[in-house]
Length: 203
Ligand code: MG
Image (cartoon, rainbow, N blue to C red; front, top):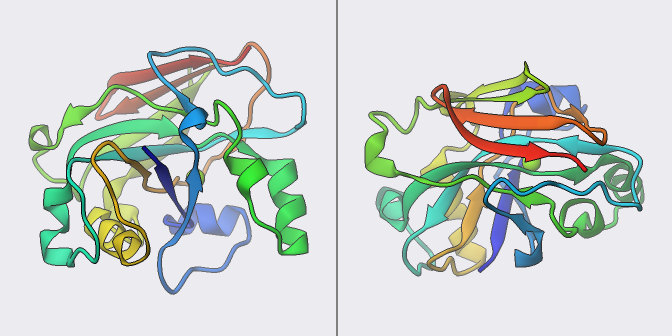
């Protein structure tokens, strides 16, 4: 499986990192070795001094597709969860300044804690899903899928122009404002519509 992540999909987060609003969805990959499941801890890596959390809704792909038209895109994912796009912001800033790829900053081991998934049918409106992240019990990020520049169907359609999506692939759909650093001992808890979905301790 692969993990595809959308960057710069919420205007308030684009502004907080002083990035430009993209003319089409920006995406990058994490390898399957990035995955952390079943609320296992995140171990702070030795190569970074500035690891950030980014909470994001995550789609689970349910069939193989290439060049998917937007009007059919919703049939290619059937479950929604929530995940943390853990980012070595120091390595990312260094890569960005040199025009180099982001792989070391975004694709390192354990950089993708992901929750259990909920069936898509459980949501009355996919364009109005509330989610948030608590850090040590205080809410630090709040988002709603209505605020995405590119919605789920835009994302699937765009990605599949370049890369075949396959059953079991995960798609991180971008983070709202409020990203920030973690330290050892922190507890991250992610919620969809007020329901706790993911708990991750930094060790
Ligand atoms: Mg992200």
